[in-house]
Length: 382
Image (cartoon, rainbow, N blue to C red; front, side):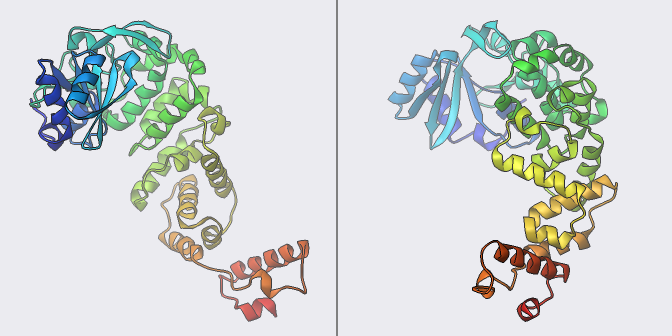
């Protein structure tokens, strides 16, 4: 089998391959770019592995006039910029020691050794510069079947890096076939090592959860995550029922995936700390949860929050009542979002000043919104 993606035939990736193979070394595309090319998905990052050691990779790149950055040279990785596209080149390697978060590696001799240190079989796929696929661990059948399976012993892979628990669910959300269910051995291994989640940085946890919740339909994976205890370990009190309905509402309404909207559907406590949300994300999550609980009209939501957030809240409300998003309500929110109050502070000054000015403006705005934005400036001031 060969991959037929354009990047595998011409351009920066082939230029870097030529630098390595022209000097007598071997080069293979590896990981996500190969996986995604085989299923017709976007390639993402382009990664190469080689039997050339990092110092030699740096030397060859510079000789060829390419910029090379020792981004992870202690772990064998050099980033080469070809036509302004970054391509990571990593020397074949194997793990010699792990602590659940980091690994000590040494260089390997074969792609079989390199493959055995990877997380899932579908990520242990390689391709020669001519596109010929090499599958040392049986990852190709797993990929085509939508079977996310750990390389070798699941517990061994997890204890090498406990973040793989979350990656297991994330990859199932993106590449798994929900009709076949989640890999039972992998799920059992995740359940047996939940304590390992406590030692992970919240930034790494948050990054994985954002990617998981950005999948087209993360609900089955998140439900499996809850069933084994991983979700509640990270987010006490979270549930998946509303998320499942929300995904349906989104699909019918044509709403793009939004991790924060979906996080609001999960509920639970402590999301800001658990996932190290940025301040803007935490504020947005708070607005979504408040909007889900209050009964502010759609047009008022649009006026106060903007069209996008207002429609998201309406979608959450629709999911809570197990119904589809009302297009009339959505249009009302969009209408409210473009309204501008006809009365400004200067219209009330100098007769009204200080705290009283703020209260008066708030009262006018409330009456104006309640009128469906129909009251004129004269009517509001009269």
